[in-house]
Length: 544
Image (cartoon, rainbow, N blue to C red):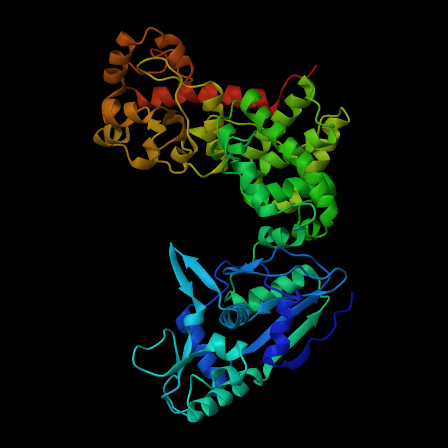
């Protein structure tokens, strides 16, 4: 579509602010600090009075309905008249809202303290052409002054009884300079939303681009349907015990971007930025409850079938997208055993190949077609991209809590529901503990300090095969830098469920795994063989 060239216009004070009073000019919720401090506002008014340039206001005229501010301080803003185009302020938000706050005498409450913009005043004892500021933040104790709010909202005749003739003349001059000031404005008309947001980004945020989520929050906002995407996303994460949410499921670290991609996958079959922006507002709002249900079903399946306890353990957040897509396209019916097995195969293949380390959007479009194959009863093809895990892939694999391959191994460990070495109780796995390799939940079975004393470097001891999932207490207070045969002998003596406990860590036989000999190499090889067998069984499942 062709875009009209920007229109340069000048507006007087009264004309500009009458559009706010009539609901035509709105402040989009692209930023939180949309009003200046009283000090900045006083300086701005001083510049106007002295005829200094104060920059240009840029407006976007559109029929789009965006999320916008409904109040300026304690002043409620009117709704836009039906059928009227809105003018959203893209540049000059702080200037225009600050000037409006003074005119209306707005009061803001910040950290429990009231800030009254009626206090901004003009020092009538100063010379009009003074180089010093004639506009003050607070009324002076011993000087003659007039509130800017009063000056803008009253006729000169109301001041006759209070001020001298000389002061009245100054007041008249200040009033004329404020109300006849030519504000420079640029109007961009009917620009697409993403281009208007790009304009806002370039002129307001110094290169800090508005996120796609921020744009979609603005685009999908609907007063009549009471839909606010930001609020809906926050409720999806945590709804304060008013129903199901991701926090209760342990998946509250799923980012807004992934949720948008789930919606786009279900509605568009693709998740590129342009695909998401292309979604019609009504379609987006209509689909929100269904896609939210699909996300919950996906999370429930991951926790029940793959036993992934928390979202921080997911190799990629993007793995949630094709699973939610499966449930959405399958009319929210439970996955069959075969369909679940085929998705599980995909999960391990994508994780162990580090599939989404790049080109996520393009690869996801291919993978959604793989989900379509599953729904049609066909096994997806991975020809040319197959992977079979070998022992050497694991022996020197550096453990990094943020790397997809390592997270996949951690998912395998979590599947076996690791138990406390000392009591046999299930280990509590928490999102807040899983972000770093030195997390409370991660324990090197052969402690790093112990192996260092044996002459091994950290790159050798920090192997994924040497990692177990334990609790904070054991890791930091009981095990420390002790030899495995020492601390395991203690646990074996006191834990009635010791055999089941060690099986839950994929260390089923301490003799064969070299634990009683403190043989690190034997341990790695034995545990590595077991991990390899388990991974390959998932990569190459037997199907009915």
